[in-house]
Length: 91
Image (cartoon, rainbow, N blue to C red; front, side):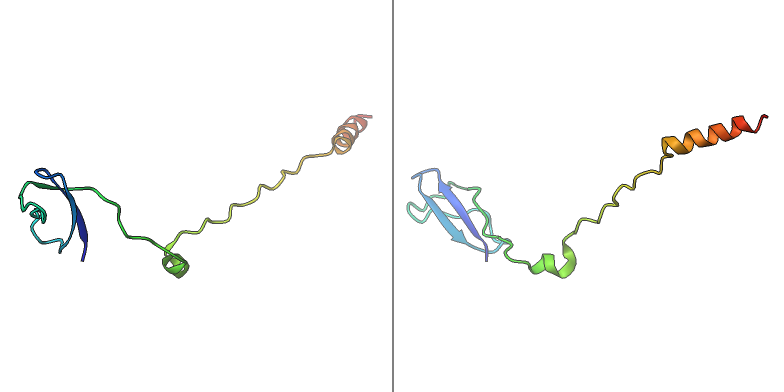
């Protein structure tokens, strides 16, 4: 069952109440029995520990990114050989 922290406006005491979510949101102060209490925001006790849900496949794993492949570029000697062949055929 969840616990809720309250602060009393009349006597300024703070207290914790364990009750169901569907119960009334107001709780009287156990010290002065005043109805002027307000619920406080407090830390949660919910903690994910260990592999559990992640190891079961519910976590996302990064997809492998493709490594960039170098684009083939002609070597300078190959480029000059093709131009010299085209000029020598004019004879």
